[in-house]
Length: 185
Ligand SMILES: C[S@@+](CC[C@H](N)C(=O)[O-])C[C@H]1O[C@@H](n2cnc3c(N)ncnc32)[C@H](O)[C@@H]1O
Image 1 (cartoon, helix red, strand yellow):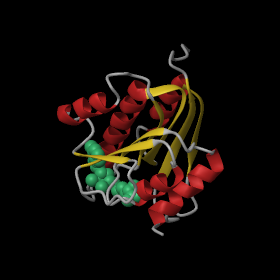
Image 2: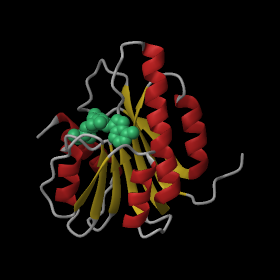
Image 3: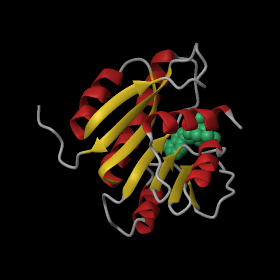
Image 4: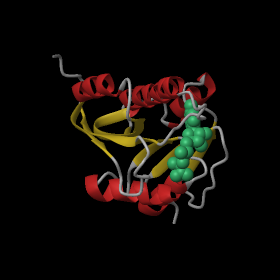
């Protein structure tokens, strides 16, 4: 079992994220550790897994879209798969990460861009009450992401799963209870 697999299992057990008939969007799916876990947990539901790199899939309930979220052709394929309905998913997961350049400011900015793309997808496609999990690096942009996301969900936590390397800045934002109409503060 991969480290990635353990991380998702930890989050799922702690927050009870996944129901067996859920419709799930998974962003940054390659090489397929999370997809594999989802395939086992979803006996009746479906995963749409997105990544420009190949995703290894074993279950029949996984649809892979090879490309980047935010690219028009991927967004179109997603709309087709969800039959044009907005607000149709139970769960949006993102484990997306950029290629690291080693320049901390640039890497943080790129990482927050991916968080923004995942958040847009969650706002667009989640049904009321749905959940969103996103990999997020500690640093600039996290506080404003929390402020914005807390307007849209009943509960938002920032957590570090046990399987994350202790020295990494990696956290996961876990947002539950999607409110289709954001709270005005
Ligand atoms: C840490 S890996 C994901 C590992 C995966 N969760 C697993 O369990 O095997 C991060 C992935 O994010 C993908 N990625 C980066 N930008 C992306 C984008 N715009 N759309 C989709 N995937 C993206 C990368 O190609 C890479 O495969």
